[in-house]
Length: 196
Image (cartoon, rainbow, N blue to C red; front, side, top):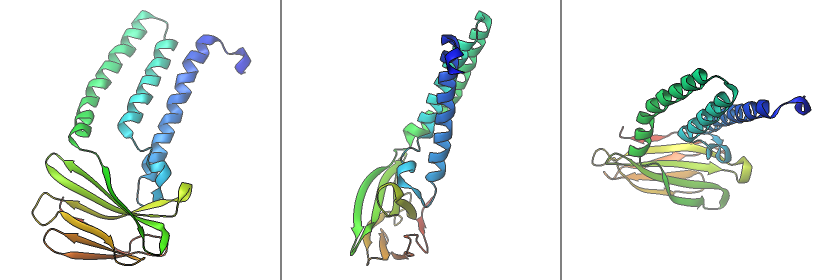
């Protein structure tokens, strides 16, 4: 079948197949970003970038496949409208400061378990995400431990540290200490959330 494919058909089907593959990859990465997901796959969870690439490849396939000028104008206008609808999503992405890893510390006496703290901001409020990674390499999984939004005094996270190989100690600005026990697979038995 591939030998009988014309250059025009390949120019249509190539981007279409790539767009489909990227869309499936984006869904898999989003599912992996959930609690307990594989770290390697969740690192690919970039929904806005995936949407832009899938849209561009789909438009390329449509423009190549549509022969009439009217059809190309319709595809072009449709693409413009969709791009305008994406502006609010892009603005949200710009206003959300993203996440930056600020701490990575292995558990005492247990090299396959790591405490990870990421920092960011929502407009002016500082944010902290605390998680634990269990395992290494391609099989490493990440579990959510805590979320702190510094929108109110006392909600800010002051310290995240190991309190032994199976327990994490989280201290907030108001002096509260939260101890989170971990199961043998690294999953926290409880989680902590401060602020909105």
